[in-house]
Amino acid sequence: MTLKTKIKAGFAGLLFFAATVQAAGFGVSPVRIDFTPQDRASAITVTNNSDVILRVAVSLKAWQQDTAGKDQYTPSDALVYFPRQLELAPKASKVIRLGPKGERGAQEQAFRLYVSEQPDAGANRQGQVAMLVSFGVPVFVQPQQAVPSFKATPAAGKGRLDVRIDNDGNTTLKIKQATFSDGTSVDRFDAWYVLPGVSRNYGFKLPDALCKQAKPALTLVFDKKTLTVPLSLASGDCKA
Image 1 (cartoon, helix red, strand yellow):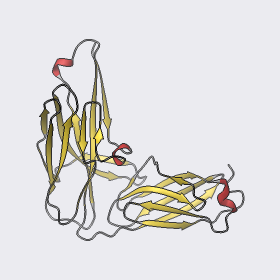
Image 2 (tube, one colour; image 1 turned 90 degrees about the horizontal axis):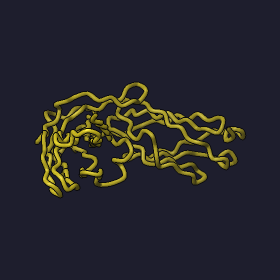
Image 3 (cartoon, helix red, strand yellow; image 1 turned 60 degrees about the vertical axis):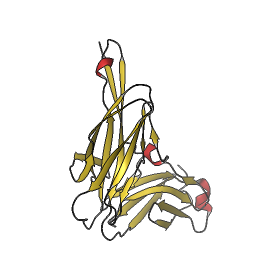
Image 4 (cartoon, helix red, strand yellow; image 1 turned 45 degrees about the horizontal axis):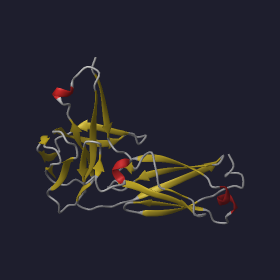
């Protein structure tokens, strides 16, 4: 019996820590594309790191988030991209070219361009496991006039701080770091992006020392904006 396991890596985390994403068989670079109003085209390089022929398929999905901030993806043809199928010799590289269609809207558009490894017909043998990898590269088409803006609403208690982020601007925000006024910081998040018009909640453990400060605060660093949020804490809020 043949067992196939397909691994889809949308890279809600990994995509943001390197200029090139590497899997066991191939790499993709860059790991994010931003089209400014002046940009008409860009490119992604796919590199076959293995010793066998690599076949990949390319597909585009529009990226949205629901009222809870959960990612939703639907097939899209809003970008021009080619080729849509690639075959790479061992250690070889090929380029995928892409660009936006039509006029820019008032709000940034978000997509993921998926580069997905295809199964090798010769590998379908009894007992063999096929590990297929799919990279979802974030692609953003900026509006004519970018206005990054967000609000943060904190709520503390029982050793925890919950912060609601409302993105009321017209560009996507990517959280990079959260730092408390005692120096404690967080730079790893389950959810990195907040699309325009979307609200998302972030939870943090309150440092014990924070409730002893006269003016505790949390500084949120996003890729386009930084905001320091004053915190109103009672003496027992930092205890679980």
